[in-house]
Image (cartoon, rainbow, N blue to C red; front, side, top):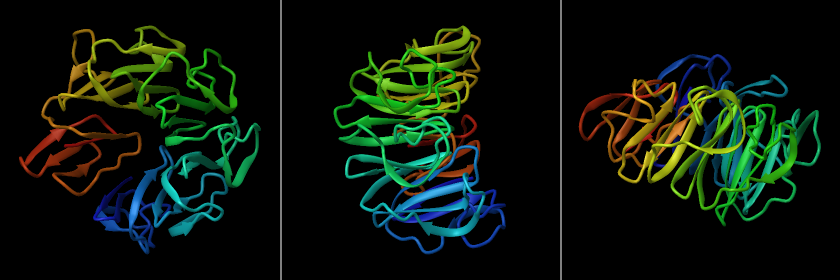
Length: 318
């Protein structure tokens, strides 16, 4: 399931059993298909591992597909009541949006992932996350969430069984916790069991490691640990036991299961250059400019007319 924004119109394609494409049907779509009724779209997010999509149109949040909490199926976008003036959205087990530099969340709250100070049940309506303001962006995963402030500080909350919050414990957090030791944070990406971020142009990861990163041991890492071998990082995506980072030179460095080299350390992803943006987990691509997604693992640069094999569920924009 993938989505892209082109000229502020939203197009989606892929598995449509639960209406996540948003075209009013449950027919799988193999080419980008316009989403019904949305214009002036500025943000889109596909829930990782779930058939649900959310987008921001004219400052309003719309979601469709299968509601993760209720199980209801919506084949076209439905407005999320109780929130407006939204700049971005991140869909997941709990969905969150940035509204006037505040984070508002709704959905499942089994682990405190709604950030309202409570653990358990669900939060049906958008609710302001406690103790968090001056926010630039928010990212969600299965049970946890993180936000970067305009001061480039990182706060995380929710599920922490594998240390993915990064506060040195394995206690679930119902309110945001500032992640110490990281400064000038520019990017964060969450997967179900771990989290990665870019701080001072360096990649750090924490949570469960399969022995491939960050420290080469199969264990929980309860606080951020540096991923060696990546210099000048701008952005990172974490996908399960793997990750990729874009660097200042425009190259992409991958580590973990995406690293197919027999040599230690991250490997440069061949065939891509001048990369400006990575989008991971549930794949999304910008359909403007020079790139278009051909499938879950291929990217074509229309300027050069080459096909590039890229890691599963990760898209690069060049």
